[in-house]
Image (cartoon, rainbow, N blue to C red; front, side):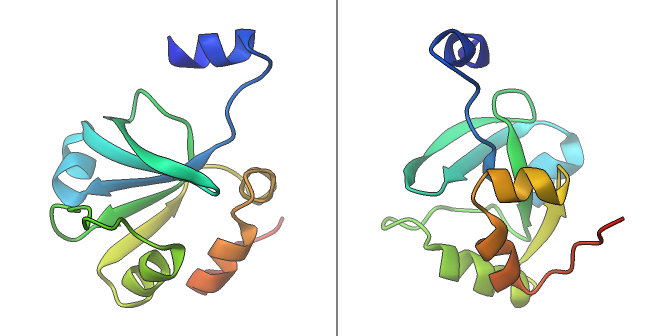
Length: 113
């Protein structure tokens, strides 16, 4: 419903970064935290409510620190093996969402065909 309202308001929202627990990921449903550059985080349902370009799956329950996460902290968690990253769109979508620098900070390779 929210996506339809966004389209009526002048366009779809840009994809963000979704963070879910391993349990929610394995179950195929559960709470998801959605982060967008320059916008505060919000809670949604995995996988229904939000369009995400990059999904981070936390090894644990993915608690949100009181002060939230910085992109640097998320990148460190991925590099340290505390989160796994999954691309849910092509690199063009990552770039359009303004996430290319973050993906680069993660040190992830994205194949171009």
